[in-house]
Length: 94
Image (tube, rainbow, N blue to C red):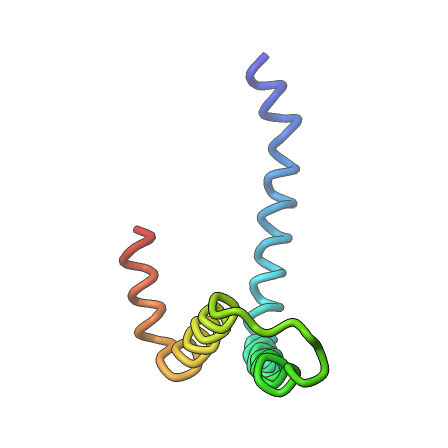
């Protein structure tokens, strides 16, 4: 019974592993684009938080500004210190 279950599900595991490998290769090549897009989106968010207050009656809350600042700090940390961040994450994950 266990052998039949293994024979049934094992090809799906290999297919999933190949899919994850292909995605990791694609994401590795597109990493500069993702970082650039994150920077552009953060710039748009900062512009809307400070300049967009005139066009809308709702004012940016302090919490949303803190979240925006933390997001910007995270993107800058990844851009400026990628190797240190990778070592830090590897130490905590393992």
